[in-house]
Image (cartoon, rainbow, N blue to C red; front, side, top):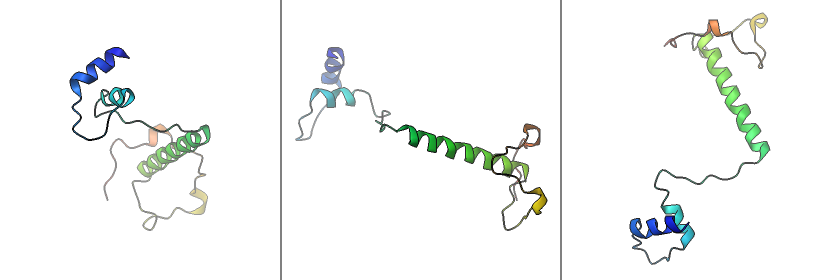
Length: 99
């Protein structure tokens, strides 16, 4: 911690009227690419994981169906897919079709 504070004394020029304590200086030494993130509970992490999985599934199916809009393309009832199914990898297009 002392090495970080010594480096902070060299790098940080405080032109504000706010006094920086040791913790503020250590945080500023991490650089501009550092962003503290809040702690996520297990339920929030699970919800985010499901969102990612749903997004991936929608993207894969849009590649299989040729990126058709719902209004332009209606599947017959016998071809409707359950929400939990993923398309086969062989059916995924190499490049998306542009309409």
